[in-house]
Amino acid sequence: MACSLVLCASAGAARPREYAFGIPSVSMSEVMTFHGDGGPDCARSGVCGYSGTVSYSFSGGDGLAAFIVSRHHLFGTGDFFYSGLTSASVQGAGGAPCTDKVLQSFDGFEVEGTAGHIRLLFHPYWDAPEYLDTFCTGPSDVDMWHAGVLPEIVVTERTLRRHKLHLQVSSTRPFHSGPFDGTLSFEVNMRLRRARTLGPILQYLDL
Image (cartoon, rainbow, N blue to C red; front, side, top):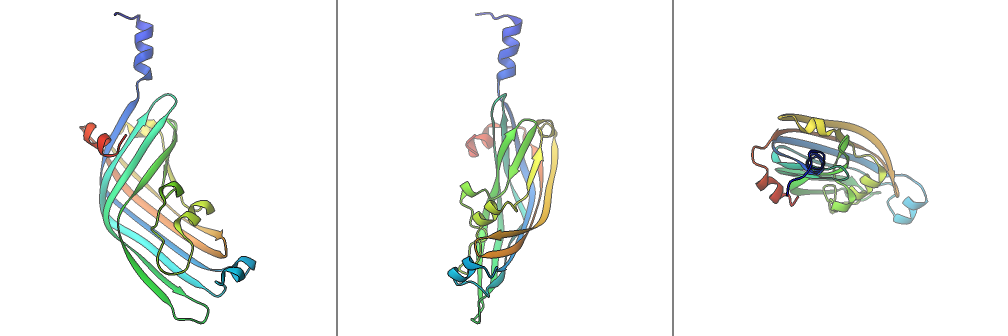
C-alpha cells in the first residue's frame, strides 16, 4: 500500500543505523600499584604493610566492533583478540613476596550513551572482568571500576561515519578501594576500519 511522502520519510528516519568495523590493530596497558591504607579496614583485612604492582598489557591485537544507533536507543560492543599477560608482584607484611602470571587472550569494550555522546567503556563491572585478578592479594578490576579510575573514549555518530578511525585514551589516576590506596595507569590505542559487509560482524557480536 502506498504511503505519503511524510510518512515514508518518517519511517525511513526511524530505521536503525548500523556501523560495523574491523579492528586491524589494538594495544592496551593497565598498571595498578597499591598499598594498605593503614586504616581500620586495612587492619581488619590483615593487609596493612602489603604493597604491590599488577600489570596487564597486550599489543598487536585485532578485533571487531559494531554500533547500532536509533532515535531512542544505542547498542554496541567491541571484541579484541590478542596474546597478553597479567603479571603481579606483591610484598606482604614481613612475608615472602607473591608473584603470579596469567595469560590473557580476549578483551573489548561496551557502549553506552546517545548518538551525540557515544561512550566506549573498558572493563565494566557487569562483564565480570578478571584482568587484574591473580593469586596475589590486591584490588580487583571491579574495585577499579567502582573507584571510577578507568577512562573512557567518547565519540559521536558523525565520527562513526568515517572510513577509518584512530581512537586512543590514557590516564593515571589515584584510587582508594576498601583497605587499599593506589594508582591506576591505563592506556588503549586502536584503529578501526569500516567493514564493507555488516552482516557477519553484527551476527558474530550478537547485535
